[in-house]
Amino acid sequence: MNSRVTKKMLTPFEASRPTGAVLMINLFDPQIATARLFLEAITSHQLPYVVIGNKMDLVDESEIARVEAELGVALKPVSLAGNDQTEELTQLIETLFPPNTRIVVLGVFNTGKTSLIAHLTGQPLKISNMPGTTLSFEEYRWDERVLIDSVGQLIDVSRPLMVGYDFSGLDTPDAMFDHAMRQEAEAILSSIDSARPGLIKAVAAIDERLKQGAKIVTTGAGASGLVAEEIAGQFFETGMMCLPVTNAFSQGLPISFAKGIAEEEGGLARLVAAHLTEKDVLIAVSASGGTGFVYEALRLAREKGAATVAITENRDTPMGVNADIVIRSNAKPEGPSSTRIQTTHLAIGHALVCILAAMRELGGEEAIGYMMPEHIATKKMGIK
Ligand SMILES: Nc1nc2c(ncn2[C@@H]2O[C@H](COP(=O)(O)OP(=O)(O)OP(=O)(O)O)[C@@H](O)[C@H]2O)c(=O)[nH]1
Ligand SMILES: [Mg+2]
Image (cartoon, rainbow, N blue to C red; front, side, top):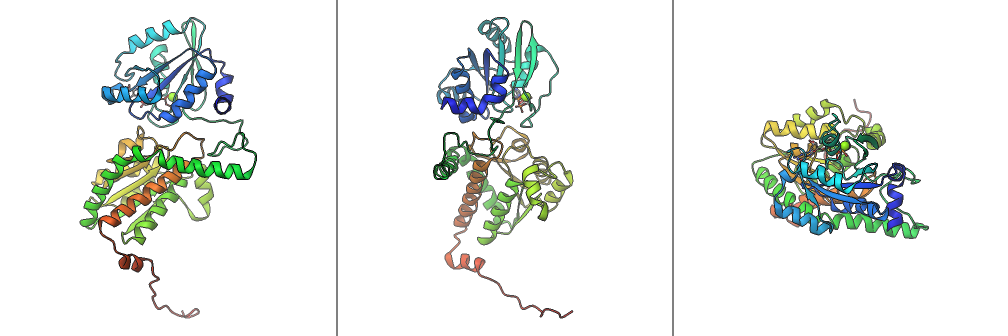
């Protein structure tokens, strides 16, 4: 395990030569599995460390205890934005790390790593709820110590492939295949508890609106766009009308998939929202929670009074802010190519559609009707 973690963290983490570590946890969206990997990297390097539970303003005390129990370490609860417990925190860090310590600040994105460094140094740094605000390791002097800001995602640029699975130590396609399939399945299993509350709310809200004649629109970008299209297809097959509007532009699909083409185009958000009225439902999919036109479409749809549902891995993001209901997957940790997250979002979409169909008591005969070809006589070729 240690060698795997070391490898994942190797390039940026070891290159920054830390002699102490702060691990930030977002109490509102703790992402324990990824936090554990950061913690392992810290302990395998035998660094002195402190774990901070930030955003205590957003949770109650029982949640703090729950996160501590799940992670298996004590944490210092603070609110950096609310300036709560921050003086105690500064003292704790000063006591734990002697002068000349190089303190790396680790954690998932949006945990408040940069907020901590800005607080300690007084420097005006770039802070936002967009996942991935900080995209490189940066050093800041803080009196006699050095603070190192980091990237909130486990990226190993020394790996031959920057894809979802870590095949370290697996030499044969057989072993790799077994590992890949298990990884996908585990992602779904570990999302049952995190997704259930949002899914149940979404089922109730969509069922109620469907009874009033609502239509459903799905949206997403790239791989999440494909998930949105699949969900729409399943809705159609079970007799519910659903329109997918994504950034998958025909021949440009592989590019929009890999490079996020048009994600910044606000016109796309307006196009999605144009299909919706106050009677309707928008289901938006984004692995990161920060896809531009997707979270903007949620905002516009909500402004119109439509019901808005977000399916995402990260709820403390613009997607989470702009949706009435958040269905949160828990499919990480993994690299930037998020196969496990897409698999899980598909499973969530399938569950949502099938539960809604069951609630309508969709019978076999009716269901077959939706799947059978519906022939319409057409003209002969060449007739103009
Ligand atoms: N409610 C609340 N929000 C906070 C708190 N601390 C930070 N935030 C907000 O959380 C968001 C993320 O803060 P950042 O400091 O940019 O987080 P980061 O870990 O550096 O994120 P990346 O650079 O994306 O990895 C920002 O919108 C902050 O304003 C807090 O104590 N409470
Ligand atoms: Mg940052």
